[in-house]
Length: 118
Image (cartoon, rainbow, N blue to C red; front, side, top):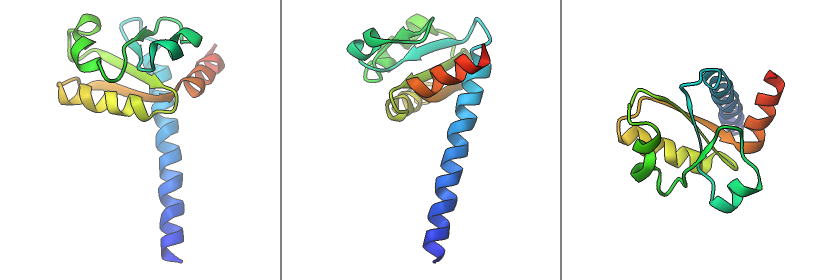
């Protein structure tokens, strides 16, 4: 019974953490200085992307980030399809010393949240 309760708590905490990241991303994107990066493949990006997003694959973010954000204090919002690849990219950027990086999760969820903002 305890393991069931622990699993439910972990699941609900994960849900709220995801909501908090999307809220933080939407708030950050109100600033024109925020860099929005889609870490999906070029093919996924071509099928649809958020306005103003740059496309850098999560596999190449460490090599290419300085072209978009040379200042490590720049606010960066990352998204992919589900949040997994943007999470990997977030870890890469934090390892490089970037301090204001937000994993907004999935494209559809972030798109929906931004549309609600309008």
